[in-house]
Length: 353
Image 1 (tube, rainbow, N blue to C red):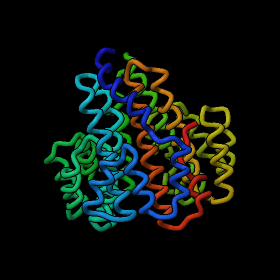
Image 2: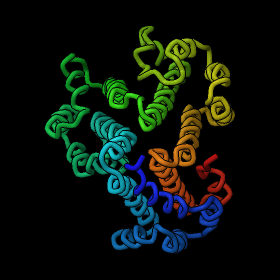
Image 3: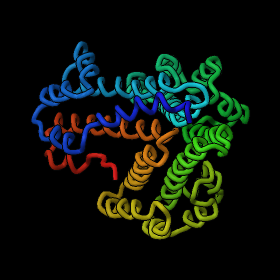
């Protein structure tokens, strides 16, 4: 694992400088955005905050600084690792490339303003932001696909295949085609014979479970969504995760969301899904379940540096911890700006378990 030695040494030092939950809670007690900005200048976020202050103020300053920090995660890992190690690490960021392309195409399909599309993009992928913005400037979905082809992005393949079928390019049809292609592509690249590939495969097994279960819950929650399937629910499963297609099909025929969740209590997601169910009974938001599965995924990634200290576990774990910290700081800034009760801000911090 010599390919990881230099980068892992650098990242262990950075992990030690991440903000504790106690520090984040102290930030939540601050009474103004200016106080939060001042506090952040006394942390490793100083450079990003001071740079953002040259062109932004208040909440926008914090948001811009956090976007800069997200870009820094990718830039640092690409600088610290090369060769097969760098290629393996890119495997996790390629998911964000796909999510960004989906966001652009969805925005164009629904005639969303360019500024809003740009703000929805996550600067945590391998595609240059300039390329994504050029695609976002397309006049419609077909124009965007043409630009994707010109840039020779891998995602052009499923989009061209979809166009060749001469079907309506609805946002839902495009996103499903992209998801199914992506999982085939990424799992083909990762053959599972090495430790790093086994970790990547496990990450995407969890990711597939999240996407598949989201679809199942939507079908069960809405008879209209189910009717649109024409009885072919399997078409909406993107890849095989730890929950089998047979199990997913059975879940999709259940009477209600509660029954689905109770049937999954024996899986590794059981505890998290039950917490999601408790929240769902109050809010009736299906997103409660994805939030809990994302929490499971985060907890799994954060443990990787200790489980695999000599290899890809360290960069994967660091990226997850850093991204979580950035999300928390943005949430704190939003909470202070909106005059939320500090107790409410603290209650909704993302916590690693």
